[in-house]
Image (cartoon, rainbow, N blue to C red; front, side):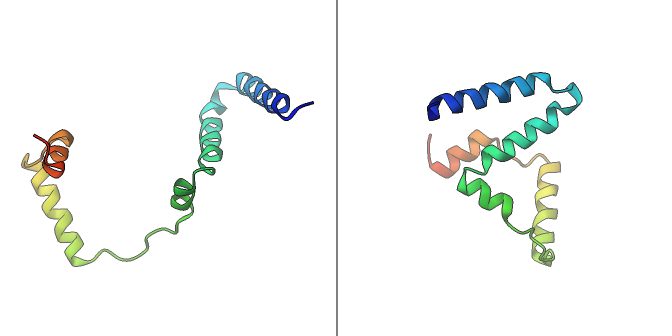
Amino acid sequence: MSAQKLRVKGREELHRLVDELPQREVQAARRYLEYLRNLGDPVLRAFMEASEDDEPETPEERTAVAEARADFAAGRVVSHEEAKRRLLGKA
């Protein structure tokens, strides 16, 4: 059997298995298949395998977050489109 036929047969088998999954397992299967797919992307893989940032928050970071939250609460925000326009200099 050719490699192409084996790939097709393997995918058909996966489709059959997915179709037969109990509904309560569909989300878990989806997450696992996405995980497997993402292993092929070197950037996503590096991100997923990176260690957690365990450095304590600095006083400057705490101040910046508090200021950002106050700005948000006061409505001092811009849309994503406006931010892109400002950053990219597009009219």
